[in-house]
Amino acid sequence: MDFDAESTPTLALRNAPEPKVRMSLTPRLVNRLRLKHWSLLSALGEASTLNQAAALINVTQPSATKMLSDIESAFGGALFERHARGMRATPLGSEVVAYARQTQASLERFLEGIEIKRRGGHGHLVFGTIMGAAPDLVARAVADIKRERPRLNIRILGETSDQIGVLLERHDIELAVGRFSDPLQHNKFDFAPLSDEPLRAVVRHQHPLARRRSLDWPELVRWPWVLQTMSSPSRLLLEEEFTRAGVASPADVIECTSVFATLQLLQSSDAVAVLPESVVRDHVKARLLVALPLVVGQELKAFGLLTRRDEPLSEIAQAFITHLQHNARLQATPRAAKRSKAARPPGG
Image (cartoon, rainbow, N blue to C red; front, side):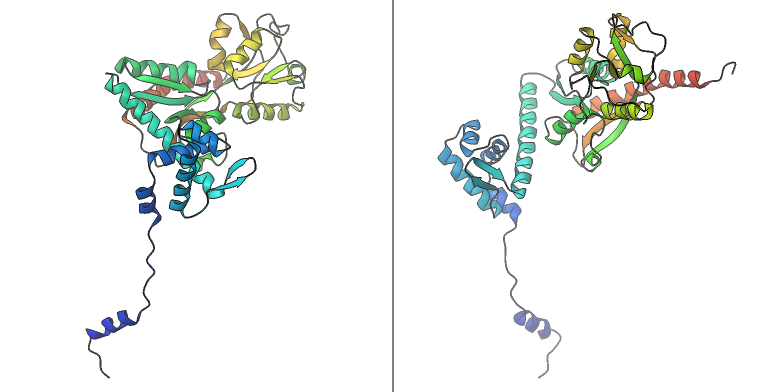
């Protein structure tokens, strides 16, 4: 039997097995899930029971049960394991909850910005910063953008790099001024360096060591200390300093993530702390603190701009970044000149 060129493909198609038609997950989710469903998922990230989550979004438990059933049906599988003490997210459920929380945070920021503009304002900006950057770089950039946009609402969160990393990942802030606190964060965030951060060992003005002309680490570690937690880059650097000096870490320690609380503790006790020079500068000038004659061998790695990968920034955030980068360039010039002078040999 002969086949012409046109009939052959027709027969081939007739004899081929019929492909299975399966609806893609994307339209299924878009068609079936509403904002209230995402709000419930976000609430389940904070609550341990469905009843608590229902209360957070102001619905009854039966309604929440029906909503969760619809959500799991849309995703095609269980997102939570039920047990005697409540609910626990499955691995897939954890990813869905994390996305829901991010979406909720972004929506809340968007609506807040719209409301501010509706009232005649210039929108809002929410960002995080480490305290080492706040007194100089961040303060100047905030002042600059407020001169341009007096009715811009600005909210500043965080104190340490690990704190602002969590806020950035959860979409609670749009950008951050800090540094990586985890070796894998480069997979989530983009980083653009802004400035370095020299450290100073300080004590209160009345401290027995305040008038000493020379000190070493073996003597200093015998005093009480106020330290950042071990997740902080500055604490890790200080521990490396102890290692190089061949001394054990201080035994009398208060761990504190708040720079403000650290400064208060220093002024009310004979504790020692190592803090960014920009944080202690005004306290040293006011003779509240004394910088000890001890070189902290290394500076912290440069801090900079942290933003989420592959996510566009708002126009306000981009304008603020421009001010940050401008002030970083202005700040870098005198520092570079100071370093050059310090490195020049006597008589050179």
